[in-house]
Length: 213
Image 1 (tube, one colour):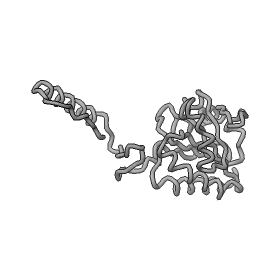
Image 2 (spheres, rainbow, N blue to C red; image 1 turned 45 degrees about the vertical axis):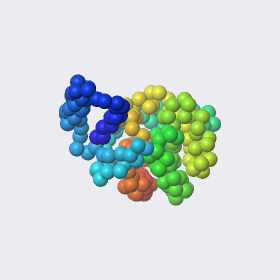
Image 3 (cartoon, rainbow, N blue to C red; image 1 turned 90 degrees about the vertical axis):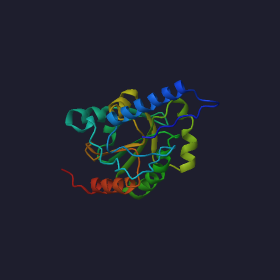
C-alpha cells in the first residue's frame, strides 16, 4: 500500500511534526491489520505494476450455486438499442459478461482482447456482452468508446439488482464472468493482469468444446 502526504509549506512546528508522526503510525498500523498478502502494487491508472500474484484465481462469487445461478440468469440488462434481455436468453452459447467503464484504465487494456476474442470465436458460439457500470455520465461516452475500439460485440447497461448480485462482494472493474452453454458460471476474472487474456481464451475454448450433457 502506498501513502502520499503533501509537503507542508513554510516552517513546521514540533507539534505539527508530532501530529504527522501519529497519523503515519496509525495508517501503518491499519495497513498491517487490514492488508492481505496478495495485494498488488498499481500505477495511478490502476494498471498492475508489481509482481503480485494474478487475481484471475479469485474464488467464485455467490452466483456459483444452483439457486443463485438461476437468479443470475434471470437478471435483466438493457442493450444499446434499448432492447431488454437477460442471460437466460443466450443459453446454448458460451457467454462472457464483462463489467467495465470507459474511464477505467485496465478496462481499456482489456477491451482489445475482447474484440479479438469475439473475432475468433463468435462463429463457434461465443457471445460477449459488455455492461457499463461507469455511472450515468459515462453512458454518454459509450458511443465514442465503441468507435475508438471498433467494438463488434453487444454492449448494454445492467439493472441495479444485477449489479448488486454480481459485484456486491468486490466492485473492482473490469470483471468478466464466463458462463457455459447451460448458463452455469465457469470462471470469474476480477481486475486485469497480463495473464488474463490467455486464461480467458483457454476457458472460452474449453467451454465451447465441452460436450453437451
